Amino acid sequence: MIQLILGGARSGKSRLAEQKAKDSGLSVTYVATAQAYDDEMRERIQHHQADRPTDWGLVEEPLYLADRLVQIDQANQLILVDCMTLWMSNLLLNEQKDFQSQQCQKLLEVLPTLKSEIILVSNETGLGVVPMGQLSRKFVDESGRLHQQLGQIADHVVFCVAGFPIVLKGESK
Image 1 (spheres, rainbow, N blue to C red):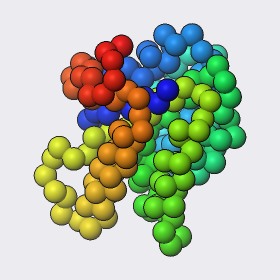
Image 2 (cartoon, one colour):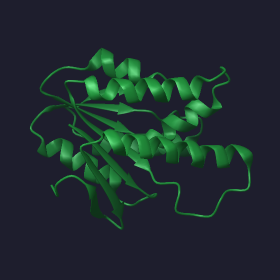
Image 3 (cartoon, rainbow, N blue to C red):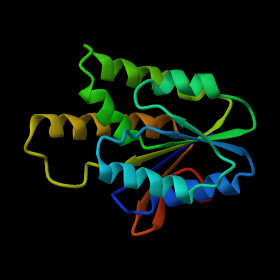
Image 4 (cartoon, helix red, strand yellow):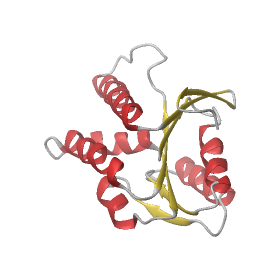
């Protein structure tokens, strides 16, 4: 099963994803896509790490998400990926030609083939004004496209607002 959990900053999406992972009864591998380029991000990462159960596996993968998911995939496991928009930022900042589109396409092809349960966490970026900068607009556009495509292949899609999950697709869980 593939679950997509969307929400704004501090909406409760990561907390919901982690609770779903805990409640699954499966072994959990947490895939972190963030890169710590400054002290504030290092503190955020440390805070998230401190909140997670110590028996969860951790894989850090900022770019080659599809390949890494295939590497760690196994039955009776839940893989929680947090967060897809940080991953998108990493892809867009990579200077290889067509890198972002290739990696997204690869992910969309790989996800339905995995034996693991998958929870994807992402920031909904399309609810605000259109950004002024070209890179910011591209980020919003590409994140929105990815969310639409992930939503199509996901079995369950949830949108979080103020800590409340709103089920968009699939049965309420």
